[in-house]
Image: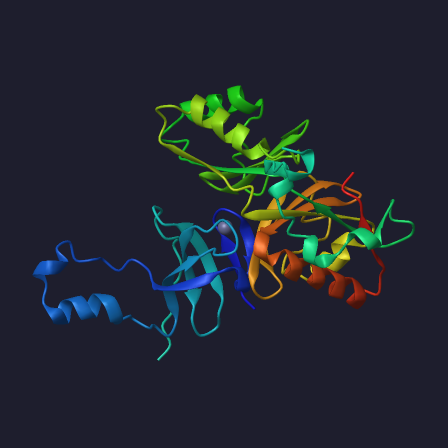
Length: 97
Length: 217
Ligand SMILES: [Zn+2]
């Protein structure tokens, strides 16, 4: 089980959290003006990186706050967590092919 | 109207512990048991949500209403006399009035709402939504460790701390560690009272210790 460092509560086990997909996706400012294709892209398509990935989590059974996590999706190594309004930590990004 | 037909707020209340039929098993003190559970019926519970960065005056208003300084450090609680305030999140707290009087929660809600007049904040009486279970005894940490994914060891869970976590497989609880005995208060959704209580009884069996039901003072 992952040990996830909630930026508010500290390190807690994975089963206290829920996953929220890719972080830093930009919501189209005027959804009613974008094409169906662009809207579907925003809603459904994720980078699905094999390597360093920036993703959203919510501390569902703890402080119930959303935050971002940098995790290696191959090794499951957690590089750090940061609040929604904060800049991501500097990490050596890795992508496996 | 004869007394027997009088209905009062207190007599209309149903304890979430009723279905557990604890009265026949209740004893005085642990008497050698490893863990004691206490049905803490009808405490006054009030949640407060306010962003202290946007509403800096709220902090003083809460102190004026309760005499307590809002704990802003994560996983901490403050207590004075019969009132505790538990950190739930960066803009969320739970007040606990250790008093089974029917209006304990409503009175505090009125007081807080009055002093927070004009402040963008939310004060809700949740007394009927949650139940409190006291946990004490030398094996309390070991038994709880079987029910929650937290590290219950004293090095990482100290008196004065409060942690919210997953209990068993289904529900969230708040654990407030009050002293080294250890003495804890566990808060769960009211409808999960039976689940949490029986789960703890199972955990005590698993930990090969004896469990006692203790009177609520
Ligand atoms: Zn948290």
